[in-house]
Length: 314
Image (tube, rainbow, N blue to C red; front, top):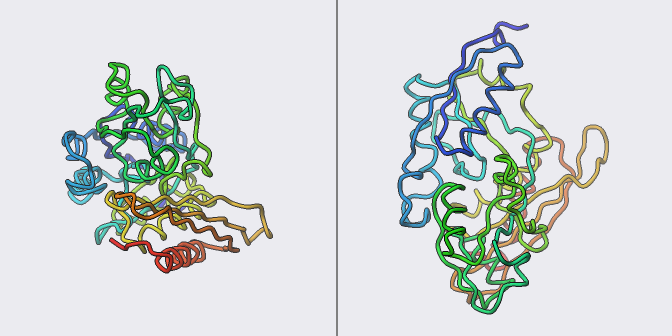
């Protein structure tokens, strides 16, 4: 074992929602399996506290990671575990994404006490989501629906649904499965129905850029195939100024192996106009990739094509 990967005591910074704690405990167990000792530092972020407004109006996805980054900066934690779709496309100076883990199911899930599918909803039914991406894709599928804001952690959202505030809500399949709530899923939307967000279903681990020891320790947890996919997705969003205020979907899958070193990566992206004055812009492209740089280039190429088709860069 190299000097960089010797057994260590590691502190993980995490949000205190049930799903975030599951994710941190998952990483904790994997690191303990490698011989390290691990403790959790639970924190409440501004994103968890502000529930009466959409993220796009109060600062975006960075509200879920800022306090965790401060803990890293101050030396109170060694790494932070995030749902990758909540991680800003450009990390602050001094921070780096050290690990992307194997992806769970990336699809969106339809959850409803009364209606088995979105298609079964009556005209004008109430659907809860605060994601601009989900809003525009829902409008494309069912322009008759009344889409209403839905904030809070996963348990809070399910409680609001069960109290009758909505006829159905849309959540990430991955979160429901991770918390053992898969039975709440009526249907998972296939990507051709509702394209996922960049990074959806994947966990990312953030560290200080100076922590080469942590990068080395985390290597066994890395899924190179998942990282290729999410790198391409995040490149699209980054090039378009993607944030919570960008109604953008991007999803990549490996489309078979070209050779042991070269992968065929298929990337699809969609953008919708929140005012519903422009039809969905859709771009799909497949390229051979060998590394993260190639995956990034694929994402940039797709973004450039979307701009030509009329996407408004934020």
